[in-house]
Length: 242
Image (tube, rainbow, N blue to C red; front, side):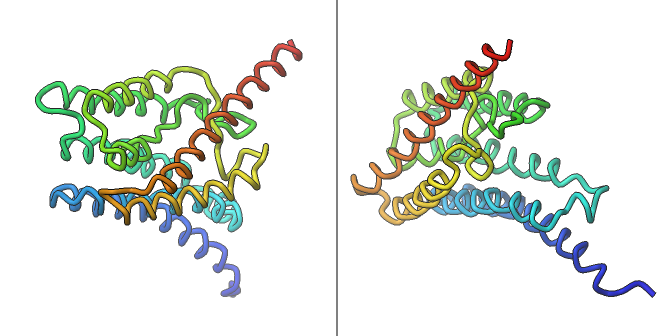
């Protein structure tokens, strides 16, 4: 008779997959928030989705889901959820709240990031061997957060989204906070602080404090600088090896 204990790792693996899939539930709740005109509630749900996405991979590696449920593609599930929560829903939120302007121009502006991210999510080299995202990693939910918090006008939003869409195709390596080894400990600490700042700023809307805005933006600057440094280092290493 099979020992009941043998099924525990399998059950744990399925629980991790269910945890990843909960992002779809959060996306649906975001749809409801958007339909009800509650943009801030939508941003809170984006935060919850980021927490899930930032922890499910670590749980999957700890539980060893590939070993115990080898026929189920958790990475594919993660990509599906990420596209919905990181790309599709942010554009729906910005479009519905009027941040993209009005008319056909707003629709086109919403579609451009969706197409760019559709390309990126299908790239086999979207994540490098040294754990960097290649090209802007579809952080449209974060872009949407700053659009709302800073109350940007449609023209500024258009420039921001178009620049980020172009960066999807530019081979810059971006930090993968939970996996990039260089400065991983401080990066994780600062990422957690950024998540706290995200929550605090939402509670302060529509009048966010300068202090928390500075903390939030400082993390973005740190992230970009570290990403550019690692990209330059990869290029120098490649040239030296060639």
